[in-house]
Length: 68
Image (cartoon, rainbow, N blue to C red):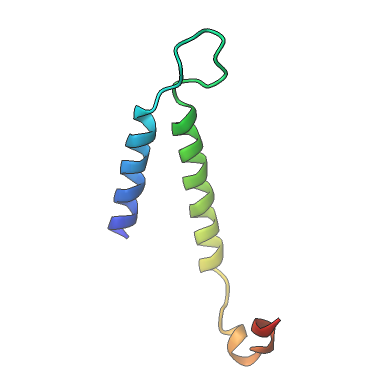
């Protein structure tokens, strides 16, 4: 788990170093990639917790659902 958080941290540092253009007409701000990375990290943590809470023992007795 420590490795996962280390990769997320270094990914955020990398995205923070990417900057948008400095022109006044640019639609991409300097934190555009950083904010998108934060959104994807938050979404992935939500999916992780949701899958963690599923009772997977249901599939032991009803394995036919895995074939579909």
